[in-house]
Length: 443
Image (cartoon, rainbow, N blue to C red; front, side):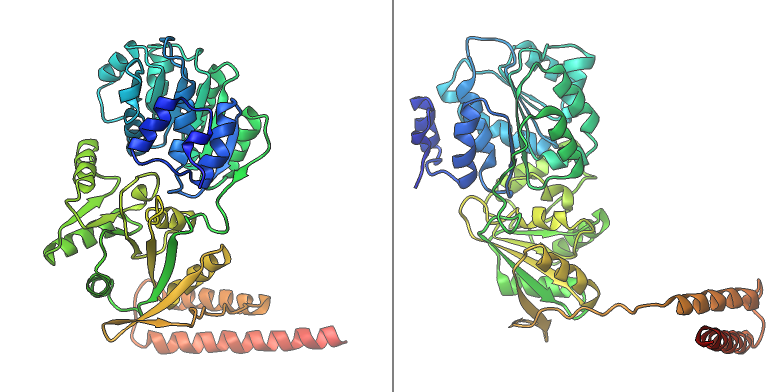
């Protein structure tokens, strides 16, 4: 097994990593670290939970000149939570680098406090794009011209969140930096940014067949249209998960399920975008202190929030954007731990399960019946879409128009019978027209 000691890293850094439990390398670390140490710009496509934070953080810190009191490296993250996680990883290395100054810049803090951090001349800045733009450009608190390395973490999410213009402005202000891009997916916006600022066309693709870690097992449960609340209660009793992370697509559903589980007597937390910055920070602290064995979350938590020891993910529904399925599932099976991703579906959502299978998800299937979960070998059967011909569309248009004429503004006695007669007359007339067309075509 490869380890950090094989690279040209400082001995104290390797020893500190070992003390923290980081010894053996993940594939992304093995591929990225030597090239990052050489100063290469990189584009890395890697599943969540594969150790990519240390893949860029370790070589970046190793290269810093601690005698230089100017900013030398920037790590941009799409959310405060993700930036804070990276900041915590970096702070773990401070005992061996007393001269190292790190500035954490993100929303939820007073701008004056962020200014004070920059005034201390940090060598490393970990920030969200908006706050860095405010302080680096608009308030001109510090110059970024000394920055030699910039990392775009969860780059697809950075661009999906509307930061394209700000990132473009930040990159344009730097003087030929080393750029390291890390992303679970490569969107068109990201492709455009790469083409503009990176000379390399190579993508280090470590995502494998599925954008989730190999240690994640995927399960689909046919609920047969039964109430999700009852399915959820029976699932918790049946599975007895160590730490269950439940996903729903809307804040309303998240709140509904959260309150339902509270009323059922469970210790449960919740994470969604409508929480204030203070409330979200407090909730994340309580979750990380293991106060809740169950957390109900929106898709905000599916991207970049690193929670320890999530044994099971349960999707109460399927997200509109299928990429978020992989981000949800990626919250488990992290750091060499086994994980399970469960998804509830019925006949109406069977097509989405089929789409995920086409994207490489290897589901095992269960059916919920008589309050029990039974394994089945059969995949969901999708409804065949009816092919509507041009002639049928024409008839449907005529019928709709006729219904509109006969309905009127006021409902009169016998209107249903009159409408049926009118529709039948239109259908009969349409059939005659089609027969005439067929005769003309034959002639």
